Image 1 (tube, rainbow, N blue to C red):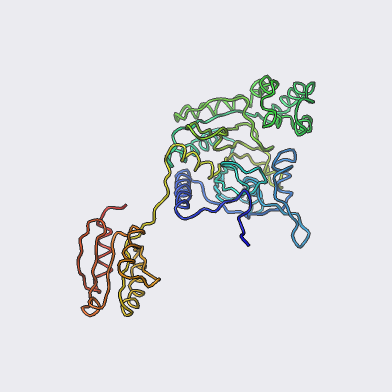
Image 2: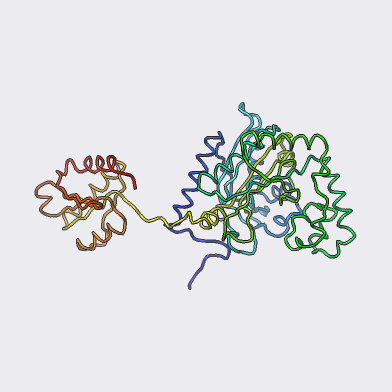
Length: 428
């Protein structure tokens, strides 16, 4: 039987996995500079967590969640996003009571949504996200926006655009909600069944509909910015002022709507503007939420965060020709000739690795020529040849694969010689 991976998933092979490691390392380093610390949550949670927080009118809850019953007849769901799990952990472990506030957290891991697979959109995908919980200061909104833009800068992407909107507070959203109902209701029969259902429950979701996005009523829909009360308007002005302070460019898009129900005030997306990226240009999305923690039984806690797909970030890197498959590379390859030398090479290989040197040897009983070919394929900086003559002299022949220079060294000095040469040479 030829078993293939499930549709919407992928294998990340050596050569490409290094790209993922590079992105993760860069994102973690930026988070360290901004004093964000890592949190890790389970891959599956109780289904109620997502229906309560993400929203029962969203596509995620209605169509995309991987939900199952365990042997205890409990409803569990593979996490479709990370914020709800962080909020649950925040309440369960009473992080809101920690001495240092606000709590600035980041996470990295697989998420699961049953969607139609396409380029940059998988059923199992990996998200990197941050959450700053416990502060309603507009300055932390600006900090989170600066953090995400710094991540893109660190990995080398330059063709990006930060897009902002305000969804206002509860009062502003309610006024906008009624205006949307009045706007769409007379012609709601022209829209898809999902939009018809959302009209009364959550008309803001209509603006996020992909099927009806070309309907003329979408372009003339009431703007949330016209319904912001004074408090919401001032909050948004302060966020923009802080971004202006630090020189972070942005554009305002009053039609920007996030796909989850827990957002209030600041909402944003980062868009890719590089050629060849594709029609769906969103790299990252996020916003402020002031009610999510209460939904999972915690105290009133303001928060703001974002998440981005690693898959889509890699697409953006490739669109800007910033990615090439990583080639293998090691410091030293041991070429052993004869049974005694092969036995001795096991000891030498272990000593090299204990000294912090990346090293390998032949395990397929290849001839000397074949072993040197393997060293070439691994881009070894040095090869060390050990045969019967070298064992008799208690020595080893070391070849610099870049210069072709070859020297003989006592076996007792071998490890230190390689270490010194590596530390003194240029890093590749």
